[in-house]
Each structure stands twice: as structure tokens, then as C-alpha cells.
Length: 54
Image (cartoon, rainbow, N blue to C red; front, side, top):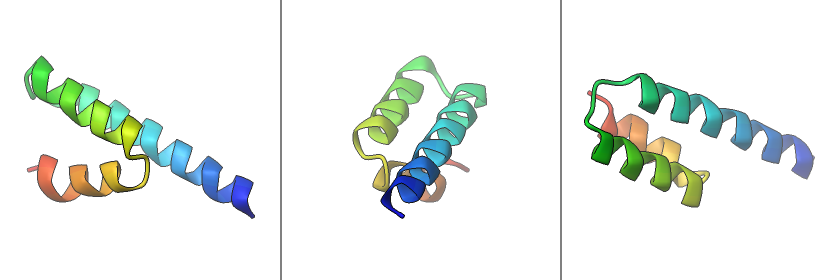
């Protein structure tokens, strides 16, 4: 069960990073959000979708 949850978190993180890279933000903001997603794998995507996206 733990592997499945880890795989799901990895897939969500990759999708969020792709969404960040496709966005029209400047490079600094993109790198900050990608760092947040990488270092906070569960909280990073949640923060991005509530705070980072418009």
C-alpha cells in the first residue's frame, strides 16, 4: 500500500511540474514552485494549486 501511495505522489508531482513549466510565469517563480514541489512532495502541489495558479 505504501508503494502505491508513493507512486501516486510521484505522478502528481510530475504533473504539477509539467503544469508549472507550461505556465506563463517568469523563470524565477517557476523555479521556486518547482523547488517547493520537489522538497515538499505532498504539500507543494496543494500549495501550488491553491496559491500559485490563478
